Length: 240
Image 1: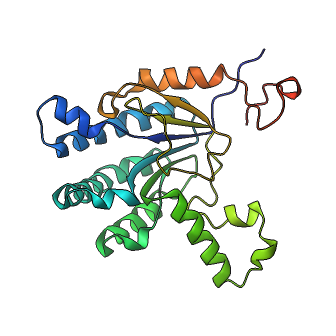
Image 2 (image 1 turned 90 degrees about the horizontal axis):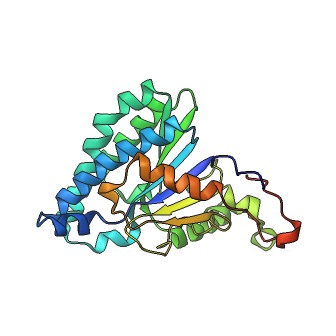
């Protein structure tokens, strides 16, 4: 049986920052800072391995319930990281995109994200998509609301129309979803898009996740058979 080609789109639930800090008797924000460094490592690894789209689950709609000082620190980290990385991403031909309820973020952060996307939206060679203030259920509701506001006949709604109004519109569905820190759930992440994604979980905490871990996830993916709902005897290793 032939091996699957590498995935076109990999999505990652970056879990374990707080646990990483707690194990080292450090403040939680230090775990998030270490997690930012992991993002750089993994984004570089994905680019080198020809992954066209990398989506990272950075902040969920549920994360607003965290302590206020932690949320503020996270927002400052997002802003600082965008400012630090945008020029290099542009030079490498990687578009920085953001998916989520961006309108609920602060006006300065929204403007910074808009400018970063505009600055990097040049070659389209690859995309680093950050899911921020993202919730899969809310995404579907927002898509339906948007369709209704446009006057669409919801009785005739089909998958293509709905997908074209999701936060991730224009992106392929993820082939592979990776979750770190040993958890085995989607946590409201890409609920629509991940319908036929392969899932990979690792015990490695996100701040410790690197190129070798990424390669292990890709190797696991490429050994699989993607059925897309078909019976096993009807399936060939067709990849995407």
